[in-house]
Image (cartoon, rainbow, N blue to C red; front, side, top):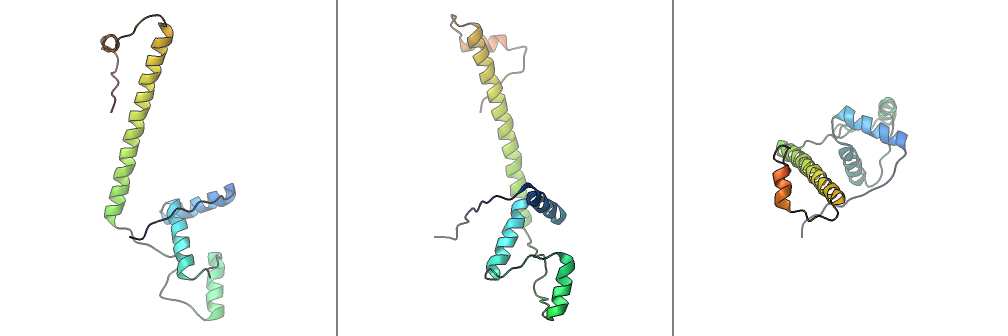
Length: 141
């Protein structure tokens, strides 16, 4: 069996969320990537990670005399372009599916309105198609 990813969820207050979103925008990465980076850093250092403002980081490094040149802060992760392209493709596909769902919902609403208007009548789907020839057709699937 392979190494499976697990999902962690937790709540933060609105101010902390906005700050995290600003960090993500500043680093030009997703908000979830900020959390993944932090978790990876936490695991790599056996839970011994301290979050400090950048202006205090230089003071801490010079005070201890133990500057670690091997790892830069904040940690950077390179992502293959194929992963980014696949992510963008999936986002486009999701947008397309949302559009189809909205179109389907509009069509179902239209049918429900017709049923409410003509409660005693039998409505044939072929007749609905004939009436809609002048309108934009609905597509399913």
